[in-house]
Length: 456
View 1 (cartoon, helix red, strand yellow):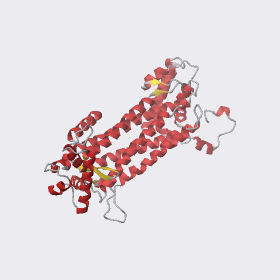
View 2 (cartoon, rainbow, N blue to C red; view 1 turned 60 degrees about the vertical axis):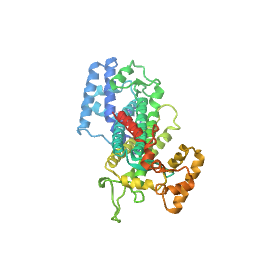
View 3 (cartoon, rainbow, N blue to C red; view 1 turned 90 degrees about the vertical axis):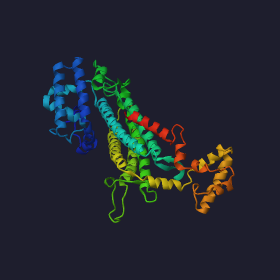
View 4 (tube, one colour; view 1 turned 120 degrees about the vertical axis):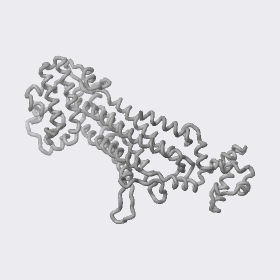
């Protein structure tokens, strides 16, 4: 029997029942559904809408149902339409007519809006925790590599000297923004929709503020139509998770490149690498590749949610049932990727010698040579041309700026002196960039301190 059978004269086709059912995926919200129902029943008793003894029996039985599910004594019925009806049917089976009073002044429309908000807030906290764990790994890795000089890149060409710590902390900035975004989305989610009912609220004298307080919500929705039809917070979370995955994917791309023999900057631990079925020499960065690949999956979840919502008139429509699988998949995928990415990075070995040798080959101190001439009185554009000719000469002769003799320098400009070699030393070039946000040790330690404070 369906709860809405009174209106219909024929049984539901079994194929329609299967198509309509959402129990297979919304069962994960059982805790939120029961917790919300406990608060709702408590309010009904407090407001005299049902007898206090009935409210107490409902609450007691709901807690027993929760314990039974938690401890594996109660399995979900695959024939149930959704988690809400499953819980209500079990409740009614256990206490009879009293169980039917639970749904007074409530609709599944505001019930599911409540459940998804509560569920997403819990998941936001978990994802935030995972991101902070990754940030702690980045902080430690950066601390270890404050003096590890490397080339920074623009269009994947060696550009200017930085340090590995500076490089890693750029990703820390991304993940800190992700954490802040999640906090903002949680604030948007943290309003109680229960009491909106189907769309037009109720004539019963309910106390929505009391329910909000019982469940720890910061406020209540101000419009009952919006209360049941709003899924902005779901889409915002999917968008934020897409950004998290984009940041992980960019980082993964770096790791994939760095692990190649052409770069050789990083060595992944054997526990976080795989081999080939045919090539015995291979050590593949499969985790990083999978993270990069799974990013498209989360993007797809975001697109699905936007597409579902784009043409819906007010208020609730059955289309909105499709929000669950998409956001659940986005959450599961993102959590899985962060949880495996962090230990992969933590156990990876940075090859400082290879980084330093690679940096020396790319003329990444050319800007510093130009700046040297500017400090000697030349205009930057003139200095730029001189150093450009110098780099061309080095390429033709198979030399680097460090290996040029002073005579060769002076052949291009008499301004050069012995102190040019100190000016173009790669470590000195990085250390000299003391501007706020730069790669100098003082700046990097300031960035690290801010990261540690954020984590604390």
